[in-house]
Image (cartoon, rainbow, N blue to C red; front, side, top):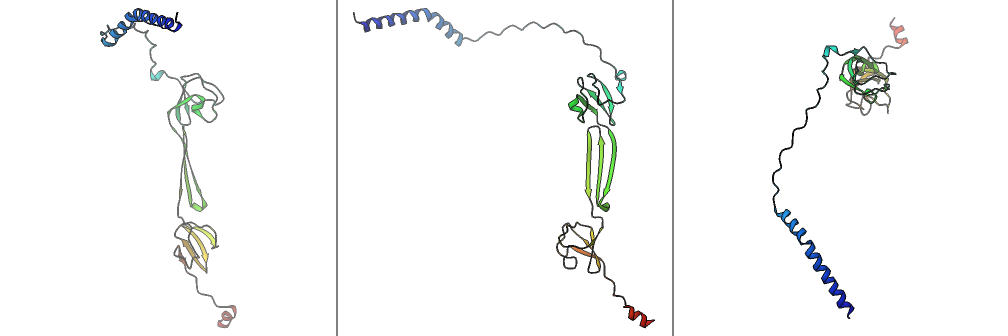
Length: 207
């Protein structure tokens, strides 16, 4: 008996048996692929949920006069804070400068106060608006004349600085003016130098 022919015959027999056994399955798959599914029926409505608790009237909400930053408060607590109104969104942590991180949300950003500062002889003005959400700073530099003494090379001057040079007073017309006052257009003379006075001997002779 030829072993090769025997094995080939066995494979052919197995292949034929598999084709016969799987034919119904292949036919079913082909039918499903070519057919259109029918529209399904609507599902049944779900059951109604339970009624929720009645809401509170705004007038019934208790608002604390303030918070103790070292304490913890339950969720839903309203409190006045730094001129505004805050509400806890969870059980809060002690406040260390950051309301949101501690579990608070700002409901109304209020005004805590306003601070003003005037520095550098009136040259620098700043306005600090203190709110519940934090400070907002507005700073402004002006060209208000400020006396800076005798002019010195290499010193940084700004518009409005007044210096003494060659017996006259000069004012800077721009920031970082170039050159010396009597040789540069970045400086404008405010006061001319006066005439030299008589010497002591001349004054005595006239007397």
